[in-house]
Image (cartoon, rainbow, N blue to C red):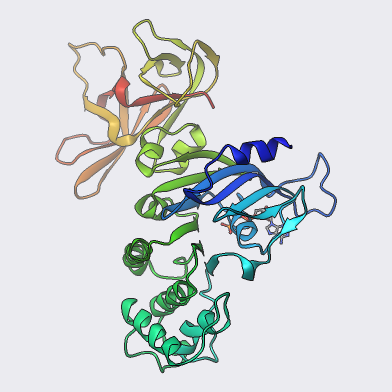
Length: 387
Ligand SMILES: Nc1ncnc2c1ncn2[C@@H]1O[C@H](COP(=O)(O)OP(=O)(O)OP(=O)(O)O)[C@@H](O)[C@H]1O
């Protein structure tokens, strides 16, 4: 038995809609040791009924992963189970065709057929999908679904007469009418303007919950991922950087890549780091020594060279410098370089030891450019990241 198979068997396939084990995909014809992998040895589960998002920058392998799950690409190595069935196993040369998999895909371009009426687009998977049906009940069910997604009264229009947002809802209705176990969504909101995107992401999430369908969603938009997902899988260069709930990704990033990609973060290079005498990690930076109470989960730091101190702009305290009070531990003096008033808050860039530090603080304070200030990095909100 291969290592891949042992690993897959140790994971629960009854509570998961998808189990992916050591998946690798190279687009090169001969995949040798030097081959570039678009997806490089990734494993993850998608629990039943959950909304799971693949998030990462352009080219990190999100779409390739989704297309492997859909069966539109053959992975080079690894295994994929869906609903307890092995739908792909490179070692055994097993590949279940896309139309035989319990999925429905909603692509970026909606995939709406322009030569068909709205109702016929919606009814297509019932007439031609895995569980084919005929007769008046097909139209009836399609009409009911169109009503649920807010397209009542538009059934007999041409699909091209719908707006972008309406086409997106039609694509969703059509996908749900195929009774899939898993919805695969590839940047489905990216062609819409920002306001509509924010509205539709809430709608999409509520439909997914209402229909109890599992969703695997692809986006490069971190706000979308944080707002919609139960679990986010952050990818970088074909690999997984972190799998976590949105709040944990934000509060406990495992790497400087995740910290930087999710929200905004101050990252200060560390010369060396060692265990603090009263817990935490003492990291030596150009600012001076910084005590960090947070470390990446499961990481014990005795001594490390390199890495980063990470602190979010809203976690940096700021006050005007006072000539009579010397900075305490984890406090550093600096000069305000820029100050932007953003209505509810002030966004400052403060230069300290030649490092620019972004600070988000409440509006109404007199912190103009040129002022000397003291910054406080609360240890409890400051992380040491080894890479
Ligand atoms: N058909 C293909 N042939 C060759 N290389 C490909 C093909 N499709 C994708 N790639 C390469 O594989 C890597 C991953 O691409 P992929 O489309 O999966 O990334 P992505 O994270 O979805 O990016 P985006 O957000 O831009 O869609 C990239 O380097 C890309 O150039």
